[in-house]
Length: 328
Image 1 (cartoon, one colour):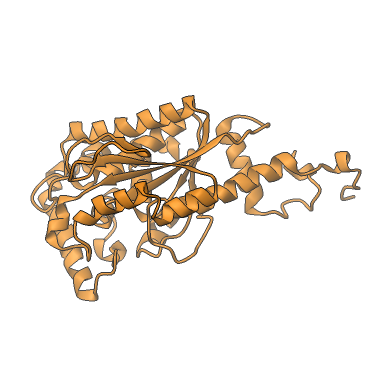
Image 2: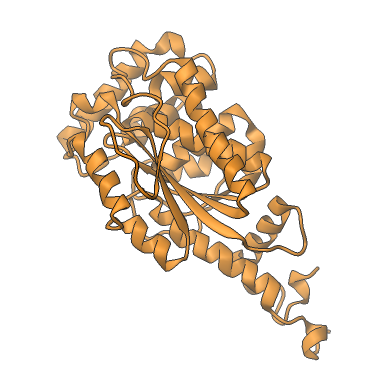
């Protein structure tokens, strides 16, 4: 009723009105307040990187984390632009990182194991990663964070993400595996072979969502899933970034389908398969900018749009307050 009474033709602000309403519903209020906006960028390494599924070496995970902490990454620029707090979470970087401002050290293990030889991690390790994300959501709620975003950093993490999508949704690896950081067509064929091998090797562990996450997932993906679960409990909307974050979102959804109502999908990644997966989830992303970087960059841009939608709801005049004649 409030949206329809604003000084505009009904529904003329399109998805901005939809986003404002979703924000109000998640927060459980008709008088929404935008508190702190925060993105957690979860960082973790992957044993499957040893199989040559990425054009970048594993060391780049650590190097990019340090770049983020030095405010030099794309996510830093976009987070500053939108006045969003950014915290990098070392949940599984292979090397030891020293305590620094903006870094949360919550390492479960030094990277996952090689999924072509066995499970990425044990079920208890996956649970610890989920609990890490839940704890961060609980802390965020206590700190008046009212809008969360997800981000990721981890060389080779499109490989476990694709394995999770294929298993959870019963899809062909060939249909959804993409070029990642710039693989050649031959490199992509090899990546598909590696993922299919991992699914065969871990077939006995793919019995339920939690075991699947442990068998072929990643620590940062599990952390994102936990953040989403915790955010839903605390009535905090979560703006989901791209391909990797969607794997975390799908993992959370498979564990508890009610989290779907708390998710806002930020953008359509250029990574092959993302459009198919979003369609399966009946999710309509806010943006399509041909991006595929990750880090939380799409989430940062879309958080700004969600905030704009809430401001429209709060700050526009109504027909009665402005003395404007309504539609007859």
